[in-house]
Image (cartoon, rainbow, N blue to C red; front, side, top):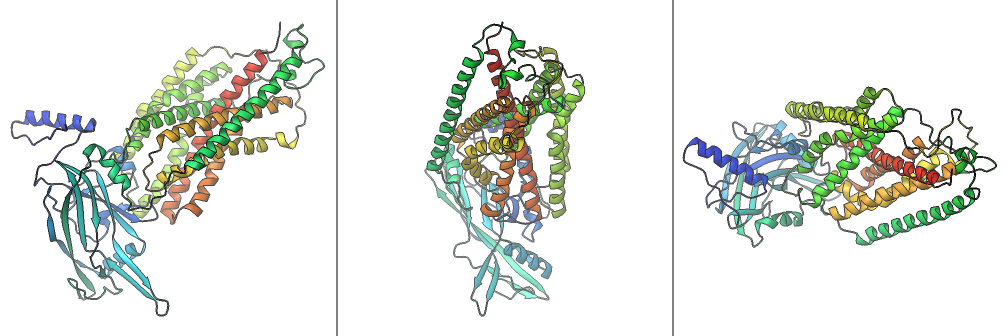
Length: 609
């Protein structure tokens, strides 16, 4: 049974104790019940164009009913990052108390304010209220287009809202707003015309806002109220589960992996049989009178150029692998639901800071193994490899939001909080991880020694060039996630609630498996042509998946969404570039370690004295 907390009327100490219990209850996900007649606070949040989910403005930027002094609700970091700016409203809603048509306020709008409302309505502005953590959506006004000759264009403002609230026992289950059987107030150019309850005079327009509240009993328990919100469809439902497409992708991926593994193992078996015919002689005698990957055994472990940058890529890629796995597992455990506003944003920020030690450890450890000397510079490069592009992109996007007055522009306190999280947690953990990795790094494990003079690389055919390998290595992993990628885009750049976390985990595992197998296959073909410069090539081959993801984002923007305008476009393409970079780093890291393990295996399997 859920416990109902009631206000304490005793000493301050007891109130403090009650507040502590309240915080504990909220942390554990337990609910606070209401008594009949208790005030149920309705917060106004934001408004914005229907087709631009990330272009939002504070509700009180419109000429609407507002209190004399606006009191804002304390928000979590995730809610602020999500553009929420909740403030108390004038609506007086009491638990289980129906309210018939009641006046909210009366406003006299200037001609400029009427034009502002007309523009908002013509851009399909919707509003978002929040009642007991339940979002409530509705349109600001109404547009009617009729006739051709003559053409009729009518714009109306909804001045009456009917709130329908469902409850079960002492708890609110669901809430929405309706304008059924309500006649909109026309907003004609030049302040309009008088229509019932609306007065016109001197270029101004007087409107009376009203509301009503109706309570309905629901049989749905409080613990399952998230299901009620998921079934509600103010926004269009586009996330239908295409099981056939998902199964088709899985089958294709399994066949692809099986094909690569079987063919590669058969080829390797023949290579081992041929190379191990002569069991006499050491490792240095293997390059006499033969060709192929075994002839470059004295060069294949020659360290690459730009060692510090390579190690930074591997470190940050390992960090994002850890971060993505943790987020998916947390989602599977039910830690993100539709009533926890911005929970996944908060978790991502915290995990990004905490997993910085992973990037520092992996980068500095491998940098030390390959005889890197400037380890301090390596740590700085690792910590700034992603954070610097992120800060630059955020600065541009946030400036555009600030210029337009959008609620997506972060306040100064939030900016300082995020900067402090990186300076006080993320960067120090990167340094600590780097120091630990440097001290615990052993020697580089190479089955064969490297000669001082590098071997000349033969001219390679066109199909072994870097661009071709990037096209092959990027397209195949992208094809494995193309179906699921649409769902993710519709969630991030739309208003859908993603719930297919089990499928997402499977697709994520398949993505990493395909990337690893393709990288091994391309590395083998590269070595077969006596080209030992595989280090950067292995990172770029599968890391190019990020390029395909960005191209898909452009396709999604033009053909799968109705987004437009400078504000929405800047945010979409800015963060799409960062998303592509994350995938490139993550898959590049997987690709490299797979290739390194494969190369060590094949050269260790040669029979040598």
